[in-house]
Image 1 (spheres, one colour):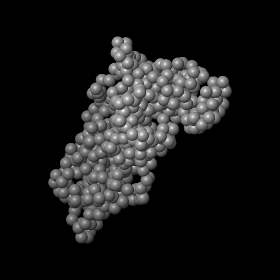
Image 2: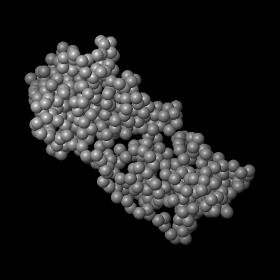
Image 3: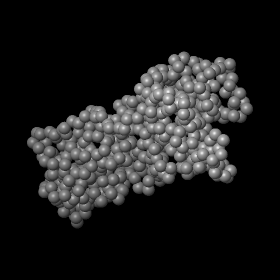
Image 4: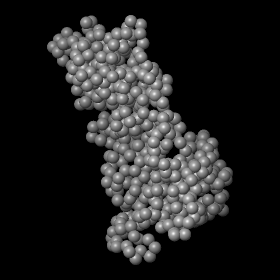
Length: 514
C-alpha cells in the first residue's frame, strides 16, 4: 500500500440546500486511530468503526495507522450516516487501494453496514440536486435511492449494493473502464390514489364558490359548520381543482418528502399537489419543523405547493396555531439553532375546518347545544385575532337541505379545474414583472396604486367597512385580492362592485349566491 492523501466528495444538507463537501483522508505512520473532523454529529463521527469493518469484509482492510478524515468546509455541520461511503472511498484512496484521480470528482452517498452492504439514506434527492447545481456529473448512491437520484437531470447515477462493488468499479476504471450506469427508471410513473371528485359534494354552493376562489388565487379558507355537512369532503377535493405541479415544483415537493419519508419511498414525480392533514394533537415542531438533533421539515413544509388542512382547528393548541402566522406571510419556515438557521419552503394553501361550538350543535336555533358561555368564548377565541386576519375566505357551511339531494351531482372537478387553470394563466401574465404569480401573493400597496387601483365607486363597499372599523388594512387588501380572483374566473379584466361585495361577504362568513 502507498500511504498518503485521498479525496472524494459528498453533500451536506441545510434545509433543502446542499453544500458540496470535500472528504479528505490522510494516513500517516503512528498508533492506530480513526479521527473524523469537520463538525460531524454523533452518527457521522461513528463512521470510522463502520468503515473499518466494511473495508475488512470487502477484503481491503484499513491500514493500522493514524487515519485522519476532514469534512471540508469544516464550519458546516455534517449530520447522519450518509457520509460513510465517501469516507470509506477517501480512506481507501489514501491507502492506494483506489485510484485517487478517479474518485476525487465523484459524489458518494450512503450508509455502510458492518458487512459492507450499502444502505439507503434520507435526503438523497436534495443532495443530488445540490451536487448537480454545483457542476458534479457523477454520483454513487445505494440501490434503494437510485430512483429518486435519477429524478435529477444532467447527472450520471451509479447504484451500488456494497463497498466491494464500488471498489471493483474503481479498479476497472484505473484500467480504462467506466463506472456502470444504473438502469433508468420511469420518472413520471402513475401514482395510485383514491379517486375523489368535487361532484361528490351535494349542494353547498357558497362553499364550492369559495373553494374555487381559493384554488384560483391562493386564498386561505375557513369552513365553519356543524359536523357532517361536508367540510372535510370539500377540503380533500381542493387538490383536484388545483393545476398540476410543474417539474421544478414537483422536484421541490419531493425533495421535502425525501427528508421525512421512509427510505426508498420517493421513486417517481407525482405532479398532484400534496395534501397534508395533521391531527389536532400535533406539536409546534411537528407542524412547522424542528427537532433536537437533525432539523426536519414539519407539516407546513410537507404541504408546500399544496394544501394544509387543519380539521377541528379550534382543538389545536393556541401556540401551535400561532406558529402558522410567519409561514403564511413569508412562504418559508426559518428554524434557528446556535450554529445555523435552517430554511424550508412553506408556500401552502391553508384550509381550516371548525365546528360552531365544542359540542357541534350550535346552529339554527341551537336548542340542542349544551355548551356554556365560557366554553363558547374559549372555543371561538382560539381562531380569532392575527391568524384569522390572514384567512381571506370564511364560509359558514350549513346542513344540506333535503331538496338538494334530488338535484343530482355537482359540477365535476375537471370543469372547475379548467376555469382555475385559465384564471391562473391570466394572473401569471399580469404579475409576471413582480414575480408574484397569484393574486393571493400580491402586496396590498400594489393593488391600491396605479395602474391597479380601482375606482372609488367600485371600492365603496370595502371603503365603508374599513372606515367603520369592520376591516383592518390587511383585511382590506385581502378583499381586493379575492375580487381580482373573482374577476379572473369570470373573464373580466377589472373587478366590479359585485366582485368586491363577494369578497367582503366571504370574508365576513356571510352566505352568497353561487
